[in-house]
Amino acid sequence: MLALSRSGDTTSNDISSASRGGLGTGYWCLLIVLLTSVVGCGSKLPYSTATVEGTVTYQSKPLTEGRVVFHPEQGTPGPAAVGVIQPDGSFRIKTVDHEGVALGWHRVTVNCSSGVIQKNDQHGSELKIPPSKIPAKYAVAEESPLRFEVKEGRNEWPIVLE
Image 1 (cartoon, rainbow, N blue to C red):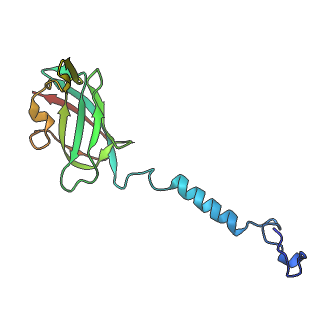
Image 2: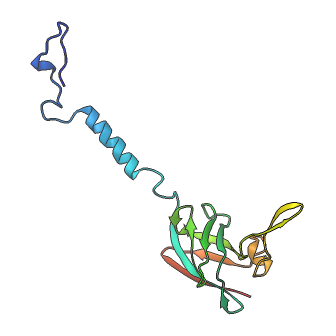
Image 3: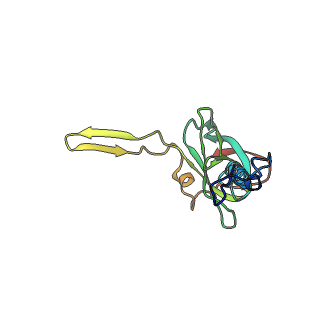
């Protein structure tokens, strides 16, 4: 960059360090902003997590659909974490968009019903959730007998519902 003197002429003393091959202040500011946005917040959760995966069976058969939800108990950080039950009964838990669950104790619920039923008649349309394929106690955090402690590393849990 060239700086103009009061008379409008350029002088060799006013040439910035960027013109001399050095790095100017603007370059360093831009570099800091770019590094902060790449490394920045949002890429990591503010608490430690670990992988939790497993299978869900009911009456000795794998559940083929539904959700497994980990509800943090008092003293365990973070929001609830959810895993979708696959057709083979397997699940893998995620917190928001991140793999894993906060370390600590969780009350666990399992929800399993087949979609939504739509009923149309002369009075209009009505949506109904079909009854659960498993006992209702597993779907309510306050009633579920399922508890799990998430520890560092990989956690595997075969959930057996009765």
